[in-house]
Image 1 (tube, rainbow, N blue to C red):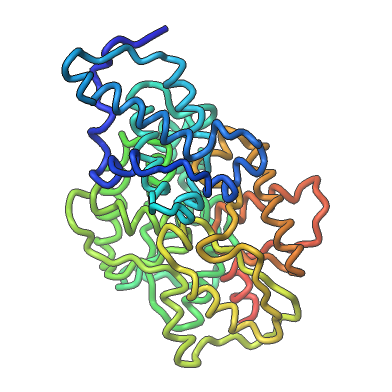
Image 2: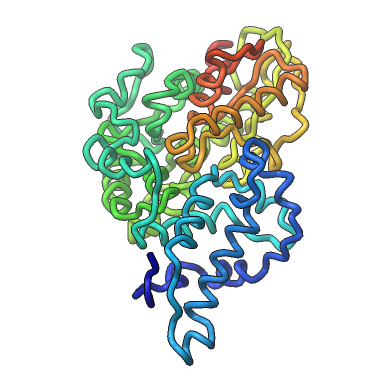
Length: 400
């Protein structure tokens, strides 16, 4: 089946820089050795150069001089389907863009190309298709009851009705990585920081945005912004890297106006207390630990040092680095919606990360991402590993 002269633009949602990026790829293949999907599948048809080649061919055929003079040629359905498959068999980890000699920012490019596939009725794929309906009904992508979103809050933690510091826990923290967000709140309280929560918090929109489903974005963003502003929030602390990326880079656009608060990562909130020698950890940690830089923390918002400053407060701990860390860290396999569409592929990527942590001699793999927390714990099931998977603030709270 072919689509004749589709009444759709393949360039209207791309920035000028992204348009240039489509022609910038030199097919040097440097990115192939860094792709976590290729590591597992060995399928080069799913890789960055091939995705860019197909899409740039589409742009030229539909918008080039020949198309303007003689009309648009038919777009074979199988080409679009092949491109859709390649775009969604990806964690959007951004590692390929990090090593790209010409600087193509793939972490920003893939969501735009996915949004076009959604517009064409081809994406998303697999279990990803159900997500907009679930988010619309339950306000989270897990389909969990909205009434349970804050059921994990430790009873000893005081949450103010109004405060200049707000905390955004996110869906993964609320439903799949509660020790992470509970640890963050315990640390905030231990530091004497008064904070508030929006008790009707909804999904940040990242799972929708990253799969190209933009229809609900304005509603969820404006709901959250209004609710947080009503509580007097001036500084919004975030633990989840994907939430951090979304809030910092895209909330203002979907809100339609500047945010009434700034966005800070939880480790940036505690950094001044560490520098002042007021980080109150009383216990020691006798273990060899290594830190995993989550994709959207290290490559998405460029935060790598602040988490390590927290690690250095763990008295007695021996800190080692993995072979790949900071901006070149491995992907845990949780991102980009791939765990919904290809769960087995996602699990194998997580195990590759754990193998690297074990090779570094670590007893504890310290993470700072709820998606990593869920995926790595799931990957341990039925697989022999001596690693303990713990969140950064979970450990810190345990050492108070």
